[in-house]
Amino acid sequence: MIRLRGGWRMMRRRGPSQFQFWVIALLLGSAAGYAAVLFRKAISALEGLVYQTGDVARLHSQAEHLPWFWVLLVPVAGGLIVGLILHRFTDDGRVRTVSDVIEGAALREGRVERREGLVSAAASLVTLGMGGSSGREGPVVHLAAVISAWVSERLDADGITGRDLLGCAVAAAVSASFNAPIAGALFALEVVLRHFAIHAFAPIVIASVAGTIISRLHFGDVTEFALPTSSVLSFYVELPAFLILGLVCGLVATLMMLAVFVAEDVAGHVQMRLRVPRWLRPAAAGLMLGALAIWFPHIIGVGYETTSAALTGRLVWHEAMVFAVLKVLAVAITLGGRMGGGVFSPSLMVGALTGLTFGLLATAILPDYSGAATLYALAGMGAVAAAVLGAPISTTLIVFELTGDWQTGLAVMVAVSTSVALSARLVRRSFFLTQLRRRGVRLAAGPQAYLLGMFVVSRLMRAPDDPRAADPDKCWDLIEDGVYVDAAATLETAMPVFERAGVPFVPVVTLSGGDAPPALVGALFHVDALKAYNRALAAVSKEEHG
Image 1 (cartoon, rainbow, N blue to C red):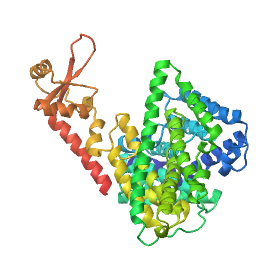
Image 2: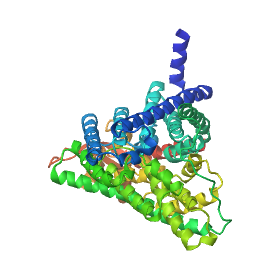
Image 3: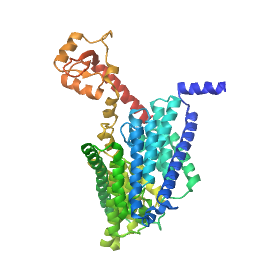
Image 4: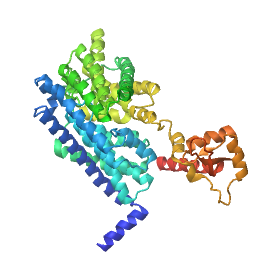
């Protein structure tokens, strides 16, 4: 026992060895895999209870036979529960999502908020189990990040180790959710860590495989969607059609993202103007969802039944188009109303419906040069999801692993590439990065932009008692000229001051407010700011290329 404690203290002080880290990755991947499995089973149990069905894969078919008032009231009750949970246990009433995990990887050494993360998982569980129209993968990713943050704290992990642990947990959660080990590993690298460092690859793969094994032990080695037959691309004649499909999907993905953001803004404005308590906001969204579900129960929950119908061609043209529009509306209501859940599964559904709509039209116009319309549904599913997530590589692989159809890779890749290229020019690269930008976190521009926001001026300044401190008289002269920076500001605010003033140092002050004069607390030297910034850039480069 004494030797074990000594080894634990040494690992906390020096960090885990490569072998130890692989063992930790295996255990962490197993824990994240079980979290994903339990979350999925809990959603199914709640859906089965409130919608009185034993087969949640046919949820909307069962909901069609329920009394209209029950379909209306279940989402309202779910929204009320979600609102009360978030109001009681979070400061801002906001559900944590994948964007918070990305922010944690970039700015918080791989850590996320643990209490708020657990609360968000509970809120998303209620949302998805009681009529909300969103996805389960986002909450699972954040729940896995909570587990990795706990492990990082126990190990006292540094930034690189913490981010690698976060990548392991996310990879396992995604692979367990989709039974997609390849895509799970690449999703963690492409979306969350946003680099493909060699040192992170092996442990992330180990964790992803562990998550997949856990999933297969409980759900079997089956694909999420069963296609009737393998689609065959009619040589290369149809490739221009898939290029056009990609552009259409890029526009649809952009509209879907903008719909969510507009819904958030409108809901926030209405809430403020009418002085509605924030805990009632999800209930109001649930009322709108319930009213919509009376006529169109297809919007309820994750939507895999409708997605499967699109991929197998069991919908006609006008059904596919109407269901796609309604799903976008339902997702905007759910997320704008702060009910919880993610965007991945809805984007798969909208993409499959968009692709089928396009495919039915294209094959009707040129029947002699067209393959199956379901091939367009498959390509559209990947194209919309890739644009929303900003993850063309991992999303393409997820589509393959979800369906088990590897013969149509060329069509899917063409549609995905054009969709992502178009949508990235219309939004900030992805739904998650745009969410962060709306909160003032600018990660889309890369580390050269967001690293400045990590350095607080008060930690880099030279205090008046420092032997190399700035001359107080010169500091006051600059303050009188309006050249100074607040001690609580970051380099993101300070660096433009250097550019404008062209001075070697800037006075640092504290502002009391009102007519009180600023209090001089030190000076920030340009050379100190540049050294700190260069060290951070070098560390990021070393991590990404190590």
